[in-house]
Image (tube, rainbow, N blue to C red; front, side, top):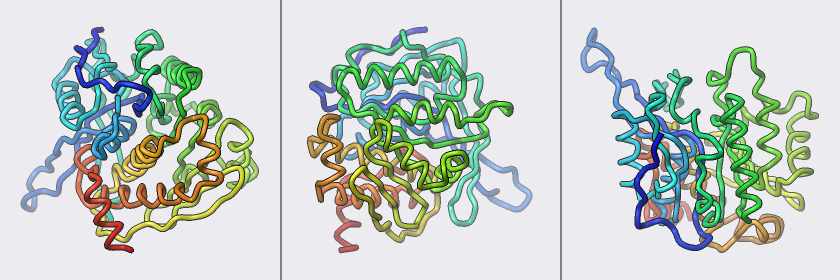
Length: 339
């Protein structure tokens, strides 16, 4: 294994959004050019935590991606695209012990996607706690993860260790469950491992389907929210496609409207939303110590969700994941048009 050469543009100070986990290549199925012609696949850079890093960087934030890529052409492509998007890759690792993960993606008429993953084995699953660089935690305002780095015991332990180290360093810990059941061994119920990580997060983002998945054994959907808010979590956000976003804190709850758009590919909508939320928090100087007060009392929290909803909507209007992330100007124009 080898470290990627250090970059000179690494974030300084505690203002970085550090995203840990998988980067992979989405191979998007395109319809045949003519009847009877073979189906073609177009490669796009993706992977949920990598998408979040790109979303934040595209908005002008300082974003770092921490993970492991294979020493292969797909790893080369992902590294180039992360750097091209302005993401700091100085804490990324590479290995020749496994290949970069792939996901074959198909879309229905409404842009809803289905995945066929080629993982494991893959390089991202080989990252270990000793691969973390202490300096990424020193610079982290936020440390973000999802459940795709919980699917095997050793990478799960690495993820939980990273969350603990980030918290001890003073970072806000964020988790988007982003559950992909097909990535888990058939004999494993993801719930136990998912709850271990969710309990370590200050900010939790769930889809409606994920909330329903967690509900059995937790007293229903309201029981899931209550269970999280009794732990470290200070805010739970639940998205549901084009339906209103629901949010819950220890002091209040509410909903936020989404934006009607002509969706063609929903692959990275949730990641665009999360990246925009985290960018807004850091831009507003909200840190771990002030996060609870911000979500419980500050009216700007609802503005943050509206901004993020616009980002998520715009990401569905183009194909790909990295390629779909909007910039601040696009979001501002959508907000102004909807005002």
